[in-house]
Length: 157
Ligand code: SF4
Image (cartoon, rainbow, N blue to C red):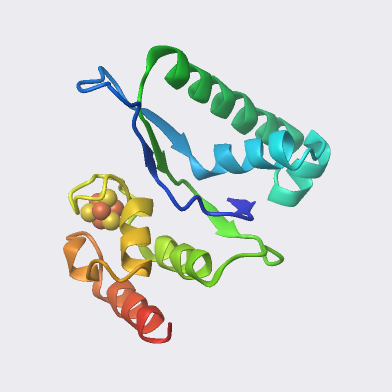
């Protein structure tokens, strides 16, 4: 599991003018966090690894695969879909309320990223829930305990 400090508000990017792309690139939230910390916040890899609670090798693997995916998408005109793996919000993360709610909801979802809910991935569905655009029932794989937890989170907004 990695600590992350930011959940991207948009989970799908599609190149303008491309109508039938041959493939979609799946970028994980962990890869984005590694790039954000090193390429945007200019932390050293050691500092970024400490921030995410992983080894330098794991950080480097996230960074390398994330960069490769982004450049592959740009060069080939592929869409990018953002989905998650195993992560939790960093306790010191400076997040907006919606990001906080989104992350708490996301950790309760099944993590199949099957797209059956119509939102492409679990993070897309979590965002729609956090914004009040959908009900938890639309994920057919959600167990009743998690569904009730999500309803409580949404009621306390
Ligand atoms: S249906 Fe459920 S498991 Fe599948 S992507 Fe949507 S939220 Fe995730």
